[in-house]
Image (cartoon, rainbow, N blue to C red; front, side, top):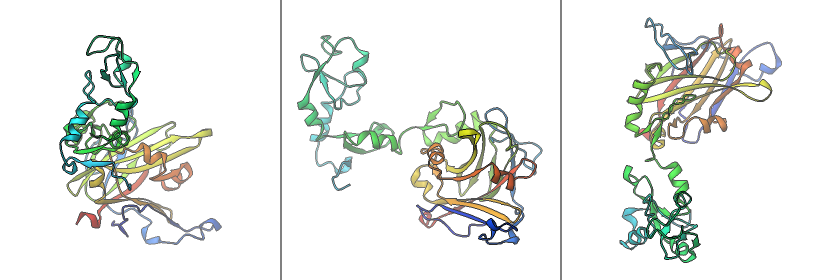
Length: 337
């Protein structure tokens, strides 16, 4: 199975085709040649603890888990060392992070950051009264200084005005990665090159299938409550995590969310496209998009419905004996060449 079209960076494509005797189906195009699933690698995924259980037909047993103003500059763009010297004046004596507005000082003039100040009883420099005096002059100076990203030690060379630091650092590609497994209580964090090792060692129940085209077969989709199914797909020398989440919404309404994320950066994710497809009973439901980086996670995709979304009725339409097969295809985009 190959992609009929490669989506661009901003493309999200949802296609529904089918035929029946009902008037509601008359707008759908019939494609009877695609009724059955192609003969591909497959994994069977079911629920076991927070994840599921799977069995690959090729193996006896496997387990899987169901701006106009320049406010950010690089270090190379800074004209001289004056900015670094100014930034050094704002270092907190306790945590060595930067003291940013609102800025408070003790009676002598020592500064301390807003994170450390509530935890102290005295000034850490002179042991005088805890800093309580607002220093408006230093706040004006701070508004002109470009501060380095707090992930500088990880490789980020960006410097920005203090008003831009929170936004940049929340999205910085050099911030630590957290465990990408949905629904798990794992608190691990680390570098990108450590993610796969963590998954292989600490989440051994997740099955990995090789190839650009696979079938993600989730078992027992009729299980009550919130359920997660997870599987890994390896192709193009990269690893992708396939996630199917079942959530109970208001008044017992149930929705399924399927999304693919890359074990990589957002920039790397732009090199790929993925396609999810449900087939059965002369109907086809497809979703095409760019994979999300695990830095972004699946929560925002689900919250914004930026993924394949369907309800129980659709799940029943495409499932057999409570098992739902999702064809998954990964392809390279023109950006990768």
